[in-house]
Length: 483
Image 1 (cartoon, one colour):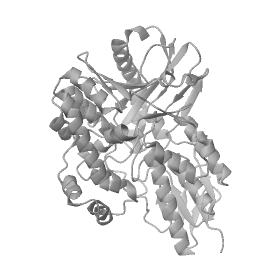
Image 2: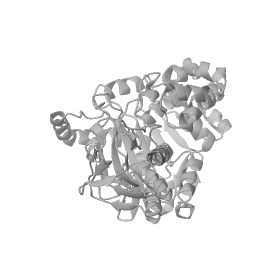
Image 3: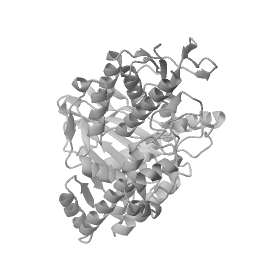
Image 4: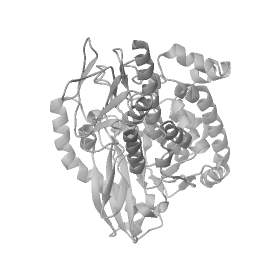
Protein backbone atom coordinates (compact mmCIF):
# COMPACT_ATOMS: atom_id res chain seq x y z
CA UNK A 1 0.00 0.00 0.00
CA UNK A 2 1.44 3.39 -0.99
CA UNK A 3 2.20 5.93 1.71
CA UNK A 4 -0.40 8.68 1.84
CA UNK A 5 0.80 12.25 1.53
CA UNK A 6 -0.70 14.91 3.79
CA UNK A 7 -0.15 18.66 3.63
CA UNK A 8 -0.58 20.76 6.76
CA UNK A 9 -0.99 24.45 5.96
CA UNK A 10 -0.11 26.58 8.97
CA UNK A 11 2.33 25.82 11.77
CA UNK A 12 0.35 26.93 14.81
CA UNK A 13 -0.18 24.60 17.76
CA UNK A 14 -3.13 22.86 16.06
CA UNK A 15 -1.24 22.31 12.81
CA UNK A 16 1.87 21.06 14.59
CA UNK A 17 -0.19 18.61 16.65
CA UNK A 18 -2.00 17.28 13.57
CA UNK A 19 1.24 17.02 11.59
CA UNK A 20 3.03 15.06 14.30
CA UNK A 21 0.19 12.61 14.90
CA UNK A 22 -0.28 11.99 11.17
CA UNK A 23 3.44 11.37 10.74
CA UNK A 24 3.38 8.93 13.63
CA UNK A 25 0.56 7.07 11.85
CA UNK A 26 2.96 6.51 8.95
CA UNK A 27 1.82 9.24 6.56
CA UNK A 28 4.29 11.44 4.68
CA UNK A 29 3.57 14.90 6.10
CA UNK A 30 4.71 18.27 4.79
CA UNK A 31 3.98 21.39 6.81
CA UNK A 32 3.88 24.82 5.15
CA UNK A 33 4.17 27.87 7.41
CA UNK A 34 3.81 31.33 5.90
CA UNK A 35 5.83 33.09 8.61
CA UNK A 36 9.46 32.81 9.70
CA UNK A 37 8.64 30.77 12.81
CA UNK A 38 6.25 28.12 14.08
CA UNK A 39 3.54 28.73 16.67
CA UNK A 40 0.93 30.89 14.95
CA UNK A 41 -0.36 33.38 17.53
CA UNK A 42 1.65 31.61 20.26
CA UNK A 43 4.87 33.53 19.76
CA UNK A 44 7.55 34.70 22.18
CA UNK A 45 10.22 37.37 21.99
CA UNK A 46 13.52 37.84 23.80
CA UNK A 47 14.82 41.39 24.21
CA UNK A 48 18.16 41.87 25.95
CA UNK A 49 17.69 38.65 27.91
CA UNK A 50 14.05 39.37 28.78
CA UNK A 51 11.64 36.69 27.47
CA UNK A 52 7.92 37.33 27.08
CA UNK A 53 5.13 35.47 25.35
CA UNK A 54 3.15 37.61 22.94
CA UNK A 55 0.16 35.25 22.70
CA UNK A 56 -1.22 32.83 25.32
CA UNK A 57 0.28 33.33 28.78
CA UNK A 58 -1.18 30.45 30.79
CA UNK A 59 -2.03 26.78 30.50
CA UNK A 60 -5.06 24.82 31.66
CA UNK A 61 -5.98 21.12 31.25
CA UNK A 62 -2.34 20.05 31.71
CA UNK A 63 -3.19 16.35 31.35
CA UNK A 64 -4.46 16.98 27.80
CA UNK A 65 -1.19 18.73 26.92
CA UNK A 66 0.93 15.99 28.47
CA UNK A 67 -1.24 13.39 26.73
CA UNK A 68 -0.60 15.05 23.38
CA UNK A 69 3.17 14.97 23.90
CA UNK A 70 2.87 11.35 25.02
CA UNK A 71 1.04 10.49 21.77
CA UNK A 72 3.91 12.16 19.91
CA UNK A 73 6.52 10.10 21.85
CA UNK A 74 7.87 13.43 23.04
CA UNK A 75 7.45 13.54 26.82
CA UNK A 76 11.22 13.99 27.03
CA UNK A 77 10.84 17.33 25.23
CA UNK A 78 7.93 18.69 27.29
CA UNK A 79 8.92 21.67 29.48
CA UNK A 80 7.92 21.40 33.15
CA UNK A 81 4.76 23.11 34.42
CA UNK A 82 4.27 25.05 37.65
CA UNK A 83 0.77 25.23 39.09
CA UNK A 84 -0.10 28.74 40.29
CA UNK A 85 -1.72 29.39 43.64
CA UNK A 86 -3.11 32.02 43.80
CA UNK A 87 -4.28 31.87 40.20
CA UNK A 88 -5.10 35.52 39.54
CA UNK A 89 -5.59 38.82 41.40
CA UNK A 90 -8.49 41.10 40.43
CA UNK A 91 -8.53 44.80 41.29
CA UNK A 92 -11.53 47.11 40.93
CA UNK A 93 -12.00 50.84 40.44
CA UNK A 94 -13.34 51.33 43.98
CA UNK A 95 -10.11 49.97 45.50
CA UNK A 96 -11.46 46.49 46.31
CA UNK A 97 -9.52 43.31 45.51
CA UNK A 98 -10.50 39.70 44.90
CA UNK A 99 -8.15 36.74 44.53
CA UNK A 100 -8.99 33.52 42.70
CA UNK A 101 -7.51 30.35 44.13
CA UNK A 102 -7.78 26.72 43.14
CA UNK A 103 -8.63 26.14 46.81
CA UNK A 104 -12.34 27.01 46.89
CA UNK A 105 -12.36 27.86 50.60
CA UNK A 106 -9.59 30.41 50.16
CA UNK A 107 -11.49 31.86 47.20
CA UNK A 108 -14.66 32.04 49.30
CA UNK A 109 -12.72 33.83 52.05
CA UNK A 110 -11.54 36.41 49.52
CA UNK A 111 -15.08 36.88 48.19
CA UNK A 112 -16.44 37.31 51.73
CA UNK A 113 -14.15 40.32 52.19
CA UNK A 114 -16.19 42.04 49.46
CA UNK A 115 -19.48 41.03 51.11
CA UNK A 116 -20.05 38.16 53.58
CA UNK A 117 -22.92 36.70 51.52
CA UNK A 118 -20.57 36.20 48.55
CA UNK A 119 -18.97 33.27 50.37
CA UNK A 120 -22.08 31.22 49.64
CA UNK A 121 -22.13 32.56 46.07
CA UNK A 122 -18.68 31.13 45.37
CA UNK A 123 -19.83 27.67 46.42
CA UNK A 124 -23.14 27.75 44.53
CA UNK A 125 -21.58 29.24 41.39
CA UNK A 126 -18.81 26.66 41.20
CA UNK A 127 -21.27 23.84 41.87
CA UNK A 128 -23.35 24.99 38.90
CA UNK A 129 -20.23 25.51 36.78
CA UNK A 130 -19.23 21.90 37.52
CA UNK A 131 -22.70 20.74 36.46
CA UNK A 132 -22.39 22.71 33.21
CA UNK A 133 -19.02 21.04 32.60
CA UNK A 134 -20.51 17.58 33.05
CA UNK A 135 -23.64 18.35 31.03
CA UNK A 136 -22.16 20.30 28.13
CA UNK A 137 -18.38 20.67 28.42
CA UNK A 138 -17.37 17.03 28.59
CA UNK A 139 -19.60 15.93 25.67
CA UNK A 140 -18.44 18.95 23.63
CA UNK A 141 -14.80 17.93 24.02
CA UNK A 142 -15.31 14.17 23.77
CA UNK A 143 -15.44 14.04 19.98
CA UNK A 144 -15.40 16.33 16.94
CA UNK A 145 -18.63 18.31 16.68
CA UNK A 146 -20.36 17.02 13.53
CA UNK A 147 -23.88 18.18 14.33
CA UNK A 148 -26.43 18.36 17.12
CA UNK A 149 -27.64 14.73 16.91
CA UNK A 150 -24.22 13.31 17.81
CA UNK A 151 -23.65 15.92 20.49
CA UNK A 152 -27.09 15.37 22.06
CA UNK A 153 -26.49 11.62 22.07
CA UNK A 154 -23.35 12.23 24.14
CA UNK A 155 -25.30 14.56 26.44
CA UNK A 156 -28.13 12.04 26.79
CA UNK A 157 -25.70 9.44 28.11
CA UNK A 158 -25.30 11.73 31.12
CA UNK A 159 -29.03 11.60 31.91
CA UNK A 160 -32.12 13.74 31.47
CA UNK A 161 -30.83 16.25 34.05
CA UNK A 162 -27.92 17.15 31.77
CA UNK A 163 -30.26 17.72 28.82
CA UNK A 164 -32.56 19.94 30.88
CA UNK A 165 -29.62 21.94 32.23
CA UNK A 166 -28.40 22.63 28.71
CA UNK A 167 -31.82 23.78 27.52
CA UNK A 168 -32.22 26.21 30.43
CA UNK A 169 -28.91 28.06 30.11
CA UNK A 170 -29.02 31.85 29.84
CA UNK A 171 -26.11 34.29 29.35
CA UNK A 172 -22.92 34.16 31.37
CA UNK A 173 -23.80 37.50 32.97
CA UNK A 174 -27.23 36.20 33.99
CA UNK A 175 -25.57 33.19 35.60
CA UNK A 176 -23.19 35.48 37.51
CA UNK A 177 -26.09 37.66 38.68
CA UNK A 178 -27.91 34.55 39.89
CA UNK A 179 -25.08 33.68 42.29
CA UNK A 180 -23.39 36.99 43.17
CA UNK A 181 -24.72 40.26 44.59
CA UNK A 182 -21.66 42.47 44.00
CA UNK A 183 -20.66 43.88 40.64
CA UNK A 184 -17.11 42.84 41.51
CA UNK A 185 -17.81 39.13 41.28
CA UNK A 186 -20.20 39.54 38.37
CA UNK A 187 -17.29 41.16 36.51
CA UNK A 188 -15.04 38.31 37.61
CA UNK A 189 -17.36 35.71 36.08
CA UNK A 190 -18.02 37.82 33.00
CA UNK A 191 -14.33 38.03 32.17
CA UNK A 192 -14.32 34.37 31.13
CA UNK A 193 -16.38 35.23 28.02
CA UNK A 194 -13.30 37.06 26.75
CA UNK A 195 -11.44 33.73 26.66
CA UNK A 196 -13.49 33.19 23.48
CA UNK A 197 -13.41 36.85 22.46
CA UNK A 198 -17.04 37.46 23.45
CA UNK A 199 -19.17 39.61 25.71
CA UNK A 200 -20.60 38.14 28.95
CA UNK A 201 -23.89 39.87 28.12
CA UNK A 202 -24.29 37.90 24.87
CA UNK A 203 -22.29 34.71 25.47
CA UNK A 204 -23.84 31.49 26.77
CA UNK A 205 -23.59 30.50 30.42
CA UNK A 206 -21.84 27.42 29.04
CA UNK A 207 -18.62 29.46 29.28
CA UNK A 208 -18.81 28.96 33.05
CA UNK A 209 -17.03 25.71 32.29
CA UNK A 210 -13.82 27.79 31.96
CA UNK A 211 -13.65 28.91 35.61
CA UNK A 212 -14.61 25.34 36.53
CA UNK A 213 -11.65 24.02 34.52
CA UNK A 214 -9.30 26.49 36.23
CA UNK A 215 -10.62 25.46 39.64
CA UNK A 216 -10.65 21.71 38.95
CA UNK A 217 -7.43 21.35 36.93
CA UNK A 218 -5.45 24.42 37.90
CA UNK A 219 -3.77 27.33 36.14
CA UNK A 220 -0.22 26.52 35.09
CA UNK A 221 2.92 28.31 33.96
CA UNK A 222 5.16 26.58 31.41
CA UNK A 223 8.84 26.97 32.26
CA UNK A 224 10.31 29.60 29.92
CA UNK A 225 6.81 30.39 28.65
CA UNK A 226 4.38 29.10 26.04
CA UNK A 227 7.05 29.83 23.43
CA UNK A 228 9.10 27.01 24.95
CA UNK A 229 6.12 24.67 24.54
CA UNK A 230 5.88 25.62 20.85
CA UNK A 231 9.61 25.01 20.38
CA UNK A 232 9.25 21.56 21.96
CA UNK A 233 6.28 20.75 19.72
CA UNK A 234 8.25 21.82 16.66
CA UNK A 235 11.17 19.62 17.69
CA UNK A 236 8.80 16.69 18.25
CA UNK A 237 7.20 16.86 14.80
CA UNK A 238 10.55 17.18 13.03
CA UNK A 239 11.79 14.16 14.96
CA UNK A 240 8.78 12.23 13.65
CA UNK A 241 9.81 13.02 10.09
CA UNK A 242 7.56 15.97 9.23
CA UNK A 243 9.07 18.15 6.49
CA UNK A 244 8.73 21.80 7.54
CA UNK A 245 8.83 24.73 5.13
CA UNK A 246 8.96 28.18 6.78
CA UNK A 247 8.27 31.47 4.97
CA UNK A 248 6.13 29.50 2.53
CA UNK A 249 2.57 30.62 1.93
CA UNK A 250 0.67 27.67 0.49
CA UNK A 251 -2.67 27.60 -1.25
CA UNK A 252 -4.52 24.41 -2.11
CA UNK A 253 -6.74 23.31 -4.96
CA UNK A 254 -8.93 20.23 -5.15
CA UNK A 255 -8.42 18.22 -8.36
CA UNK A 256 -9.50 14.80 -9.60
CA UNK A 257 -6.11 13.45 -8.48
CA UNK A 258 -6.18 14.93 -4.98
CA UNK A 259 -5.03 18.30 -3.63
CA UNK A 260 -2.48 20.50 -5.35
CA UNK A 261 -0.66 22.44 -2.62
CA UNK A 262 2.09 24.99 -2.30
CA UNK A 263 4.38 26.91 -4.60
CA UNK A 264 5.41 23.69 -6.35
CA UNK A 265 1.80 22.52 -6.81
CA UNK A 266 2.68 19.20 -5.19
CA UNK A 267 0.01 16.50 -5.06
CA UNK A 268 -1.36 15.42 -1.67
CA UNK A 269 -4.05 12.98 -0.61
CA UNK A 270 -5.37 15.11 2.25
CA UNK A 271 -4.97 18.63 3.63
CA UNK A 272 -5.20 19.98 7.18
CA UNK A 273 -5.56 23.76 7.26
CA UNK A 274 -4.38 25.40 10.46
CA UNK A 275 -5.86 28.82 9.69
CA UNK A 276 -9.09 30.60 10.40
CA UNK A 277 -11.74 28.73 8.36
CA UNK A 278 -14.38 31.47 7.97
CA UNK A 279 -13.21 32.66 4.53
CA UNK A 280 -12.82 29.09 3.23
CA UNK A 281 -16.39 28.40 4.34
CA UNK A 282 -17.62 31.66 2.75
CA UNK A 283 -18.61 32.95 6.18
CA UNK A 284 -16.26 35.93 6.19
CA UNK A 285 -19.18 38.36 6.57
CA UNK A 286 -20.03 37.08 10.06
CA UNK A 287 -19.29 39.16 13.20
CA UNK A 288 -15.83 38.57 14.62
CA UNK A 289 -14.64 38.04 18.17
CA UNK A 290 -12.46 40.60 19.91
CA UNK A 291 -8.92 41.51 19.05
CA UNK A 292 -6.34 42.81 21.49
CA UNK A 293 -3.61 45.40 21.99
CA UNK A 294 -0.48 44.22 23.79
CA UNK A 295 2.43 46.07 25.36
CA UNK A 296 5.63 44.30 26.35
CA UNK A 297 7.28 46.16 29.20
CA UNK A 298 10.59 46.08 31.02
CA UNK A 299 10.51 47.17 34.67
CA UNK A 300 13.53 48.07 36.77
CA UNK A 301 14.05 45.71 39.68
CA UNK A 302 11.80 42.89 40.84
CA UNK A 303 8.66 44.57 42.21
CA UNK A 304 6.25 42.37 44.16
CA UNK A 305 3.59 41.83 41.49
CA UNK A 306 1.32 38.77 41.09
CA UNK A 307 1.83 36.39 38.19
CA UNK A 308 -1.61 37.20 36.70
CA UNK A 309 -3.56 40.39 37.44
CA UNK A 310 -6.75 41.93 36.04
CA UNK A 311 -7.44 45.66 36.56
CA UNK A 312 -11.14 46.08 35.82
CA UNK A 313 -12.75 49.14 34.25
CA UNK A 314 -15.61 50.81 36.06
CA UNK A 315 -18.52 50.04 33.70
CA UNK A 316 -18.25 46.55 32.25
CA UNK A 317 -21.43 46.66 30.16
CA UNK A 318 -20.42 49.95 28.58
CA UNK A 319 -16.96 48.53 27.86
CA UNK A 320 -18.40 45.65 25.81
CA UNK A 321 -21.02 47.84 24.15
CA UNK A 322 -18.20 50.07 22.90
CA UNK A 323 -15.97 47.21 21.79
CA UNK A 324 -18.70 45.49 19.79
CA UNK A 325 -19.69 48.82 18.26
CA UNK A 326 -16.16 48.92 16.82
CA UNK A 327 -14.84 51.48 19.31
CA UNK A 328 -12.03 51.44 21.81
CA UNK A 329 -13.24 51.21 25.40
CA UNK A 330 -13.40 54.50 27.30
CA UNK A 331 -12.31 52.77 30.51
CA UNK A 332 -10.73 49.45 29.48
CA UNK A 333 -10.00 46.44 31.62
CA UNK A 334 -6.25 45.80 31.68
CA UNK A 335 -4.68 42.36 32.13
CA UNK A 336 -1.02 41.84 32.86
CA UNK A 337 1.22 38.81 33.28
CA UNK A 338 4.44 38.88 35.29
CA UNK A 339 6.04 35.51 34.48
CA UNK A 340 9.21 36.16 36.48
CA UNK A 341 7.07 36.07 39.65
CA UNK A 342 7.10 32.29 39.16
CA UNK A 343 9.95 31.75 36.70
CA UNK A 344 12.96 34.01 37.42
CA UNK A 345 14.74 32.61 34.35
CA UNK A 346 12.46 34.70 32.10
CA UNK A 347 14.09 37.98 33.19
CA UNK A 348 17.68 38.91 34.03
CA UNK A 349 18.54 39.69 37.64
CA UNK A 350 17.26 43.11 38.62
CA UNK A 351 14.68 43.34 35.82
CA UNK A 352 11.07 42.28 35.29
CA UNK A 353 9.09 41.70 32.10
CA UNK A 354 5.35 42.39 31.86
CA UNK A 355 2.87 41.31 29.19
CA UNK A 356 0.05 43.89 29.32
CA UNK A 357 -3.15 43.61 27.26
CA UNK A 358 -6.51 45.27 26.67
CA UNK A 359 -9.35 44.02 24.51
CA UNK A 360 -9.86 45.83 21.22
CA UNK A 361 -12.50 45.62 18.49
CA UNK A 362 -11.75 43.52 15.44
CA UNK A 363 -11.00 45.51 12.29
CA UNK A 364 -13.16 45.38 9.14
CA UNK A 365 -12.10 42.64 6.72
CA UNK A 366 -12.85 44.44 3.42
CA UNK A 367 -9.66 45.54 1.62
CA UNK A 368 -10.32 49.29 1.59
CA UNK A 369 -11.75 49.33 5.12
CA UNK A 370 -8.83 47.26 6.44
CA UNK A 371 -6.33 49.70 4.95
CA UNK A 372 -8.08 52.60 6.66
CA UNK A 373 -8.19 50.66 9.95
CA UNK A 374 -4.44 50.09 9.74
CA UNK A 375 -3.86 53.81 9.31
CA UNK A 376 -6.23 54.54 12.19
CA UNK A 377 -4.30 52.23 14.52
CA UNK A 378 -1.16 54.32 14.11
CA UNK A 379 -3.00 57.10 15.96
CA UNK A 380 -5.12 54.89 18.27
CA UNK A 381 -2.11 52.98 19.60
CA UNK A 382 -0.87 56.02 21.50
CA UNK A 383 -4.28 56.54 23.11
CA UNK A 384 -4.47 52.91 24.24
CA UNK A 385 -0.91 52.99 25.59
CA UNK A 386 -1.79 56.04 27.68
CA UNK A 387 -4.91 54.30 29.06
CA UNK A 388 -2.91 51.20 29.95
CA UNK A 389 -0.16 53.11 31.74
CA UNK A 390 -2.65 55.30 33.60
CA UNK A 391 -4.42 52.25 34.99
CA UNK A 392 -1.20 50.36 35.73
CA UNK A 393 0.33 53.31 37.60
CA UNK A 394 -2.93 54.04 39.44
CA UNK A 395 -2.90 50.56 40.98
CA UNK A 396 0.89 50.24 41.24
CA UNK A 397 2.33 53.76 41.56
CA UNK A 398 5.77 52.37 42.38
CA UNK A 399 6.17 51.35 38.71
CA UNK A 400 6.06 54.94 37.48
CA UNK A 401 9.41 56.08 36.12
CA UNK A 402 10.77 52.50 36.14
CA UNK A 403 8.98 51.14 33.07
CA UNK A 404 9.83 51.18 29.37
CA UNK A 405 8.16 49.66 26.31
CA UNK A 406 10.18 46.96 24.56
CA UNK A 407 7.48 45.85 22.12
CA UNK A 408 3.81 46.07 21.18
CA UNK A 409 1.28 44.08 19.16
CA UNK A 410 -1.83 45.63 17.59
CA UNK A 411 -4.78 44.11 15.73
CA UNK A 412 -2.85 45.02 12.56
CA UNK A 413 -0.05 42.65 13.60
CA UNK A 414 -2.55 39.87 14.31
CA UNK A 415 -4.17 40.42 10.91
CA UNK A 416 -0.74 40.14 9.28
CA UNK A 417 -0.44 36.64 10.79
CA UNK A 418 -3.72 35.58 9.16
CA UNK A 419 -6.27 36.47 11.87
CA UNK A 420 -9.35 37.92 10.11
CA UNK A 421 -9.62 41.56 11.11
CA UNK A 422 -7.00 40.89 13.77
CA UNK A 423 -9.61 38.89 15.70
CA UNK A 424 -7.87 36.55 18.15
CA UNK A 425 -10.43 33.75 17.85
CA UNK A 426 -12.21 34.60 14.59
CA UNK A 427 -15.69 33.17 15.03
CA UNK A 428 -17.86 35.04 17.57
CA UNK A 429 -19.84 32.50 19.67
CA UNK A 430 -22.61 34.82 20.86
CA UNK A 431 -26.06 33.45 21.60
CA UNK A 432 -27.30 30.37 23.43
CA UNK A 433 -26.27 28.10 20.56
CA UNK A 434 -23.22 30.14 19.58
CA UNK A 435 -20.65 27.43 20.42
CA UNK A 436 -22.46 25.00 18.11
CA UNK A 437 -22.13 27.35 15.14
CA UNK A 438 -18.36 27.30 15.42
CA UNK A 439 -16.77 26.13 12.14
CA UNK A 440 -16.34 22.36 12.11
CA UNK A 441 -13.13 20.43 11.63
CA UNK A 442 -14.37 18.52 8.58
CA UNK A 443 -14.15 20.68 5.46
CA UNK A 444 -16.56 20.84 2.55
CA UNK A 445 -14.62 18.48 0.29
CA UNK A 446 -13.36 14.94 1.04
CA UNK A 447 -9.93 14.95 2.64
CA UNK A 448 -10.03 18.56 3.83
CA UNK A 449 -9.87 19.28 7.56
CA UNK A 450 -9.34 22.35 9.78
CA UNK A 451 -7.45 22.81 13.03
CA UNK A 452 -6.85 25.76 15.33
CA UNK A 453 -8.65 28.20 17.58
CA UNK A 454 -11.13 29.19 14.86
CA UNK A 455 -12.66 25.73 14.66
CA UNK A 456 -14.06 23.21 17.15
CA UNK A 457 -13.58 23.10 20.10
CA UNK A 458 -12.17 26.68 20.37
CA UNK A 459 -9.22 28.74 21.57
CA UNK A 460 -6.60 28.22 24.23
CA UNK A 461 -3.54 25.97 24.04
CA UNK A 462 -5.14 22.66 25.15
CA UNK A 463 -8.29 23.08 23.02
CA UNK A 464 -6.24 24.00 19.97
CA UNK A 465 -4.15 20.88 20.57
CA UNK A 466 -7.38 18.91 20.79
CA UNK A 467 -8.52 20.30 17.45
CA UNK A 468 -5.24 19.10 15.95
CA UNK A 469 -5.78 15.65 17.47
CA UNK A 470 -9.31 15.47 16.08
CA UNK A 471 -8.15 16.67 12.64
CA UNK A 472 -5.43 14.02 12.55
CA UNK A 473 -7.86 11.26 13.55
CA UNK A 474 -10.39 12.32 10.92
CA UNK A 475 -7.74 12.67 8.20
CA UNK A 476 -6.35 9.21 9.03
CA UNK A 477 -9.85 7.71 8.86
CA UNK A 478 -10.41 9.38 5.50
CA UNK A 479 -7.11 8.07 4.14
CA UNK A 480 -7.83 4.54 5.34
CA UNK A 481 -11.23 4.70 3.66
CA UNK A 482 -9.70 6.00 0.43
CA UNK A 483 -7.11 3.27 0.45
